[in-house]
Image (cartoon, rainbow, N blue to C red):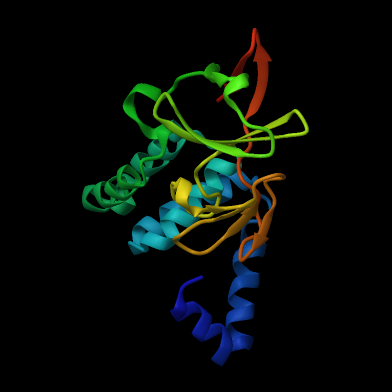
Length: 208
């Protein structure tokens, strides 16, 4: 929530509570993906960058594909106009979400070779790059966790220096995570995105 919205909620709680209730009720018969795609369009219309990032992240989390996001923007062309669609696309490109890269649009999920398991140290977390994506791989009690380095809030790419012990803190909005479990332990309310993985012939493979 922006500082301005927080201010209005504080000084005009009755009005703002009613407004948010209206928005929730107005979309109660829509599935979460559709509701968030519509919210993406409204944020583009208002040219609210933080709002666009927030609802883009939610739409992707609810199952929207990058192709669906782009189609939703283009379908809204009569209301948005080309200038606002280009504005939104510039923001999405700067976010550098791997799934939006031209080579990955429409690509089906597959297994990716990440690292030899013997290179991973017990009780430690490795920061790795795999096919243009950064990963945090935690090994404990012979169990492995493979996380996307992107914060689930606004997909900020969290650097390896943000990891102190088992605490990973996103530098942008200070969401903090327990790297051993992936759970959010401060500021936010969503866990790290964990990739399905397997070990094959001593190699760690991750699926995305």
